[in-house]
Amino acid sequence: MILPSQRHLFSLPRELCYLNAAYMTPQPKAVEEAGLAATSRRARPWQLSEKDFFTDVERARELFARLIGAAPDDIAIIPAASYGIAVAARNLDIAPGQKIIVLHEQFPSHVYSWLRLAEERGAVVETVMPPASPGEGGWTEAVLAKIEEFGDAVAAVAIPNYHWANGAPVDLVRVGAAARAVGAALVLDTSQSMGAAPLDLAAVDPDYMVAAGYKWLFCPYGISFLYVAPRHQGGVPLEENWINRLGSGDFAGLVDYQPEYLPGARRFDMGARALFSGMPAAVAALQQLLDWGVENIAETLASHNRALAEIFAEAGYAVPEEDARGPHLMGVTAPGPLDAGFTARLKEKGVSVSIRGASIRVAPHLYNDQEDFARLKAALSG
Ligand SMILES: Cc1ncc(COP(=O)(O)O)c(C=O)c1O
Image (tube, rainbow, N blue to C red):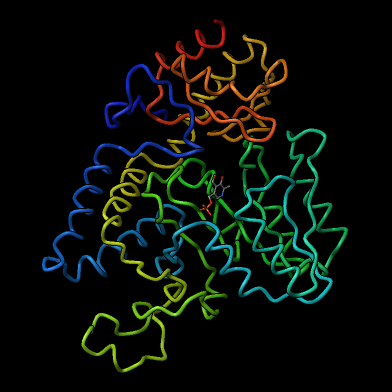
């Protein structure tokens, strides 16, 4: 279902056409209000209760689980995508000479941990180069070819479902099956799509999957999520925090050290995971996403991107075909070389986009409307 404009739920200035959700989404007013109220909890510690330490974080876990079609036990609360990738790297079984497959120009938070692991274990990070055409399964075929080339020497396929710079897709169902067939782990960074494009978790069956919270999930900066497949939930966390142990609700009893963790993926939760100065905003954001529905968001953003693609194409920009972009995210290419002032000049005309690599990254959301599209058209023509 195409959703009507939700701009009234946001504090966006009317004269701004914000196409930069992939950089950071503005939070809906209700999320901002929940966040402001949450901040003031910290000022009055005598009012803090069980809810602040335990209830809200479990609610966020449950809502995120529902959003992705997992069980709450499968979700860890983490601060950043890099943290979740580090958890995966810490627990990856990898022998000298084995390969970790990544995409060319993949986001650095999903590369550095692998480079370090490779260095420590004598393994190799193998980069899949961009296909001649990112459409018609271009990236997918390129990743599959890499898996086939190295066979059971592949320890991990560590990729996104849409390239962060331009939204070019990878078919994770096919890649997941190929990874499993050679005994490789599938480690996904879905920061640039979770909440905006559907993913069939059961069919993809990742081993680990991270999503940064502050983009398409509308969450506060510093609250992100890690899905850990049940088969890895006995793994080793990055840090050993008191609250992740069984019975941590009994503050007086914390002096009796507890060897057991809380159930499921909770052992991987970050320290200070309760984050009561922000968690209520995460709850409000995830609830809003569930109310809209990810399928509806994707359908609406795909329609926005069709309109935007037309405007860019008319102005002489090269626009990817629909099969080479996400429903929510696309990279367009300028007719000439892009100078450093391009985004600033566009912003002066009331349009916000980012440049990533060679792409002008276009990332609309439900607050965009016809007036925004007209503003873009005027900005590109003048
Ligand atoms: C694909 C992708 N992953 C992760 C992040 C954020 O990484 P982190 O949460 O480690 O700061 C970004 C930010 O642009 C991103 O584009």
